[in-house]
Length: 67
Image 1 (cartoon, rainbow, N blue to C red):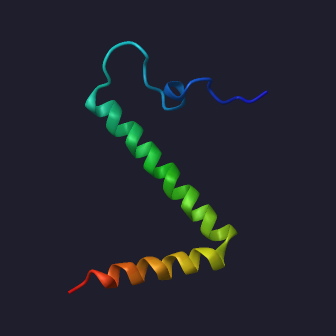
Image 2: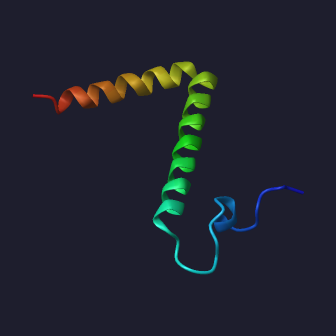
């Protein structure tokens, strides 16, 4: 059995009752962005060749729009 919460709302600690405050939304967003960065770093460590190719493609896209 998994120890993960059953609902997506529980996963980020938001309450079901009442509107979410701006501070709660910012905390939840910060946590999400930290987890996303961690996942990307892990993927780079696990698949370095693919990550390098992705970085080169991204750099090429950025150069395309530079004046």
